[in-house]
Length: 300
Ligand SMILES: [Zn+2]
Image (cartoon, rainbow, N blue to C red; front, side, top):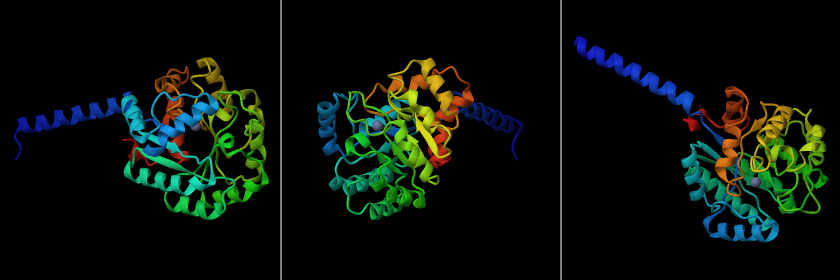
């Protein structure tokens, strides 16, 4: 039998816990970053050097899983989705194996998209492996992999991905340094989106890095989504807001393009947008959780 005093203690404890949980939910909404990069430790350094030589890009952080987790910890990001890509066919299997291993080891903080190279020999077989290993989708980097998204040789790959319910995340638009040709302008997705309505397509950099004036061509498709990566270091808050409004609050997901930019600037750019709290929650985690099926338990 509890004494009156003990009952009061239990009652006050319950209230205290309720207040703490509610405050936590209000103050700290979970954050999913759908577009980060990391590589196996032994190649991370070489990747940074290669990108510096090719695009004049310097990373803000080392592109390792360890450095990614440290930045996520410091900014209260719950989940990071590594976008793996191979710039040559011979690296595909190795990188997919690495991604599967990292996602198991770091669950639920890290998930990975796998990679397919358009020139590889058995992409269909590799897609089946990607699905079986639990990778979340497939990332394509048209500049590094030198292909246009609407080239017919890619179509059997898209068809298989739709069948396996693997979404595709494409680099879209230009690069930080001028490149010629630009392989993936917004228009290059029109045929992909119309021919493969069952394929969920996520276009990085809000649909076309530095090509935001061409977005109207793809707005009407139901299977297109967007991430915000690399835009906060490029666009003012009001321009960013205008573009997100055009694309729609239900299909834009937060992405940072870690480690290439100042992480806080990317995240604060979204947090400081002059939009409603619910619209922010959609961008910061709700859309990603729904579209990429990230379980709610990963966000606690
Ligand atoms: Zn990227």
